[in-house]
Amino acid sequence: MIATIETYLTIGLGHYLTVSVILFCLGLLGIMTRRNILVVYMSLELMLNAANLALIAFSRFNQNLDGQIMVMMVVTVAAAEVAVGLALIVSLARHKLPIWIDNLNKLKY
Amino acid sequence: MWEKLLNYWSQSAPLLPEAIAFYILATIAILFGFLVVANPFSRAPINSGLSLLCTILSLAGMAILLRAYFLAAILVIIYGGAVVVLFLFVLMLSRKDFKIVFAPTRIRFAIGMIITILFAMIIVPIAIQIPVSTAVSDSVPIEGTVSAIGTLLLTKYIIPFEAISILLLSAIIGVVYLSKPETKGKSK
Image (cartoon, rainbow over the protein chains, first blue to last red):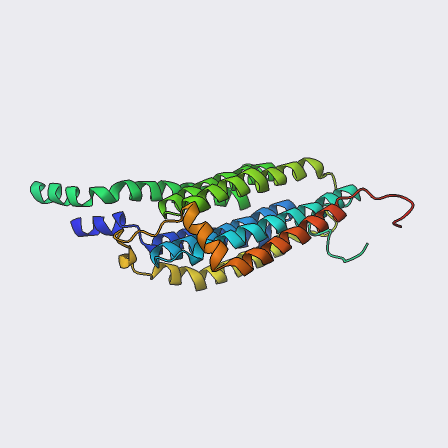
């Protein structure tokens, strides 16, 4: 019993990857099942952040900073993507179009 | 037996705060991550946005546990400060009084569940079977401080750095074009 305590107290790569995988699957579930396009975007951010956590954990447990640089690139691309996507949603709202993705299944109305 | 336990406790005591912090942060992250996609109490998008904020803050805490201090600050500032606030602003601008014309909800939900469960069956065993003994010793600590990240970013990764600045510039131009109010005469 005593020997098993240490395995719970030693936080290794597998713990972080498990959290990352669970968050990634939750984001995938959100993208697959939700209908509001804003919530779909939030689920996308959740998946990106899960990948960020995995990259930071790899960077830590390989004693290498390159993964953290990659996380900075991911954060920058995600910020740009969110800005463009939300501008599209604002443009939808300005044209009085709905934000439900079931209604947005055509390229041009 | 008590001596053994006490001896073990004194050995594992340095591990204890990190383990407690990790488990608390992981619980918060997964709980609020679940609330982002499937809040059982309300389907309002603003609850999803605030849950996303909590998830991101706990992920920043995990980044601190992983010695990525600069990235923790970046996550809080950019995600918590910019992205979530942008989401909430757009939420206030969007309308919700539309009738849904095409909503086979059950079928879509079932298909999404099946795809997600298949994906989880593939990827979760891979993450779980990684041995715990990969924990590192801090004899040569690699810390993601500002100077370390900045040095790496401006020497080895200078070309991706410049490329990402061009990406940001084009994104800014695109956003300004998209959110420009349409003039009636010029554009159709």
